[in-house]
Image 1 (tube, rainbow, N blue to C red):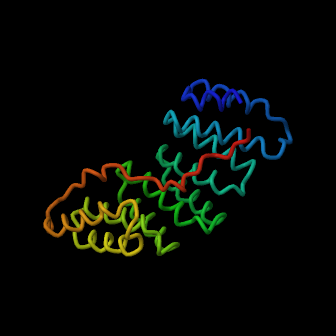
Image 2: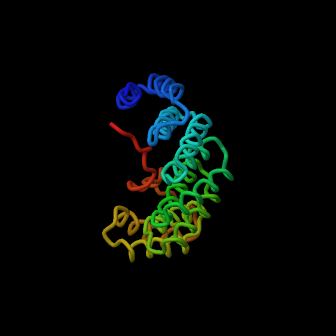
Length: 215
């Protein structure tokens, strides 16, 4: 509880200290629904301070105690990207998709967003295409592919992705920007075009779920 209070106050140093203390008090065998939550919250606190190797290690412990929780694998994957563990991140997201097929597209989408925000566009494209493969109607994945295509001066491809996004989500959150970008790419031709509104991609609000906690 002290860790959660500190985390809510954005006092991440104290949150980490308290969550670490909590992990040391976990008994063996651990009570169901306790150990995984403690370790997952420690992972969140490390994430908040961009201590990604430590976050990944904490999420791995959460997974050990509850290997069926797909959100832990999603968070583990994102921490592993921050730690530069790209191959491990792919494996984690694949596991998350296996555990929760209904959210598999979203899992790969959020992986891609994290990669885009770290300028790892080649890997991001792979993840976005995987998201679409798993969920062809995932509109936001088409939109982000359009953004990446613009950055690579692939204007025709960008237009196709934006048009597909508008087909799937005509009133979606990116609809107005997609229309503007279609017009801009038509006039830009093959020249480089930069979208100031797309400097940072957005994680799906339904994705990257925080570790489950108890009151």
